[in-house]
Image (cartoon, rainbow, N blue to C red):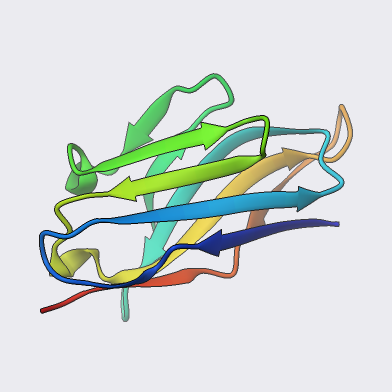
Length: 120
């Protein structure tokens, strides 16, 4: 059984920073790509940032230059450093990862989400 658990969300003023963390636990053989998605009220879930097992990253245009994704493979964790936050960043942020439970079998998993609210 595999779980992804996010932490680090909260309320922050415009221009502020937050750091989200996501820990993967359970029967993990290995982790391929990891990423962060977000969903604002009334909108579809969208990709924010993704990082491969080798460290290659890609970002949504709306967060480039402000957000940084990183991972710690030894700890099975992924992070999202969010700087210069704006109200449009307000959303529930979800961790996502493709996890190998055996050498041949991989599935995609989601965390439960963490709320980020940017408001004065």
